[in-house]
Image (cartoon, rainbow, N blue to C red; front, side):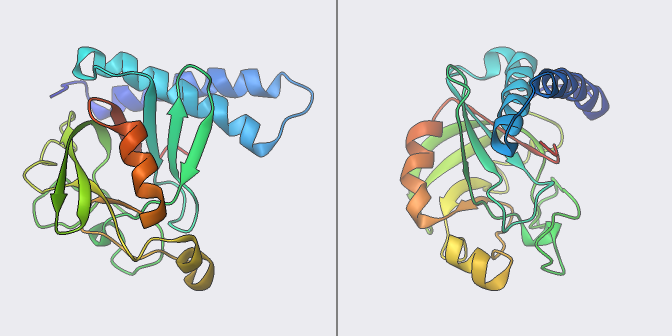
Length: 205
């Protein structure tokens, strides 16, 4: 478990993102996607540096940006060599959004909260559970160190899909797990696990 206070972590990430933003604005023209990618890569590098040896595989980092609504592709798979980003849908916990507004209102690490937790995770073993093929997660921060006890994992769910996002404007909610679309699960499990970094929070990248 990492002991660095969350305030220091936010300041460290903020400085990295500020540098990336300045670099992006130095070009004459850029697209929204091109502007977002340097920020995501900078955040991923900063988190890899912070967690150090807790993460053994550093080729791909997942960033779950819960500053975005659930209808937006906000699970970003960042290729650290090329800087390419693939963005997918991901649900948040119902305890983080009691009114089912589509927005994360709070994080919680408490058992029984059914909320999403922010912080860094290292991906663990694959297994077959009640949601089918899934991947375990181990929380590295005080804000998410109950992940294993709470059974917070990556899995597919029928309430996550582009069609639901379009038709309802919000995805369904998990009990704190990172629930993805069934069509995206194979890619997420293949590219992200085990021994890689997944970081969650409100990053506004």
